[in-house]
Length: 164
Length: 418
Image (cartoon, rainbow over all chains, first blue to last red):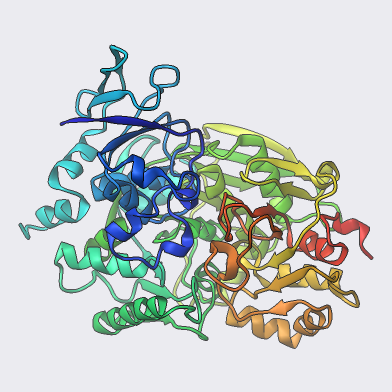
């Protein structure tokens, strides 16, 4: 599973309230949520992400509430992958469950805004094509890959229950 | 094994489990509310199972936008109400019947020591106050629980916080947990469980223990928990009809790390925006003028919290130019506060009292903030834009500190006010 995209960089502790502020949680359509992705910290994100991006961030990405709208908004704003030094645990599960690829790696000083990255989720190899750097990240656990490959947790559970 | 490992071993039918192990655990109770419910229902439909696994073990509470402030919210609540009816879900707390889910779950007897509870809300960790392992999940995880009654969990390492000493007057559970989060940081317990013990925790009532467990998520924790004692058993017996089989840590239980905290040295604590772990004693905060105070939420909207606020506000007035919003955590809390004359104190002081619910904590209604406004709140999060404008600021503190600050119009040590 190889993913490519241009980098958008954020810092530490990007919480779910800045990813999708509470007042938008009544929006049910993923495309509507996507218009407000990262609004709390960077209202220009949906525009930046139009052609597909990879978010590179610091520690504790997705901390705060359990709102699944956070990864949903990012995914539907064309975020192809989130790479962070660490993720808050509920966001981590939610991202995998809805099929937003994420991977843990420390890329400080190894990427700049706008660099072209390629990510292999299974091997954990990240390539910065702009700078010509390769980084070995921790690959996703097998269960997570299985869920993402199934197309998300709902499909995974359907399969497990013999409904597909 | 420690209490966390023992609960997860019981729930997954294993004789023994250890940190790092992935278990497939049977869930005792599942909770969702008006804001997460609609998405849970959509994912449940996608899975395609016709009936929920057990309508007796699902609790639905309306609290995030009650009564609904927009047509959209009203429509979503209707959707959840219809689902409750269709599935025959037994415990449904509609508007005017319950209050904030994490207050209702404890007071209505839906939490027993030793249980595994999941909720579609990050503050589900609150139920550790009664010795349960409770954790927050997203909508799709919850849909899978509704469909199957089980969930995969990684057994977490447990951090033990030994909180000894006696709290000074007007220093509360909130100050303990803010201090701890400041000490270990906002991801200091990521993927781990936090066990709170020691004299200062034993001295706290269930309300105070709920405040502490509630905010364990702000350090990233998967669960916060207090070992059940006589106070726990008394509280639970008064509310639960069924037999109770509490689980406690073995004598030789192991912990990933033990922290010691001397509660007797704590002064009131403040979390400075925009992060929950930016915590200082009130004496070091300096002059901060406020536009709004807010007392309530799943962290500090219980009876002990309203009593502490009333003690400060009795016979005083909220400063002109400042608004104080007070929201009791549940119908039961509201009713008892009325009987004790607390609401009378609040209204006479010039505070506005709203009906039970989450209120402005999530920035949806009843007290959202404008550009450049400053609020001191008894809630749990002070992230950018949490309570309204991304240019507003939220300071976190105990209800007593909020009350004292509302009287003076600036952040104030509650020990300085009458």
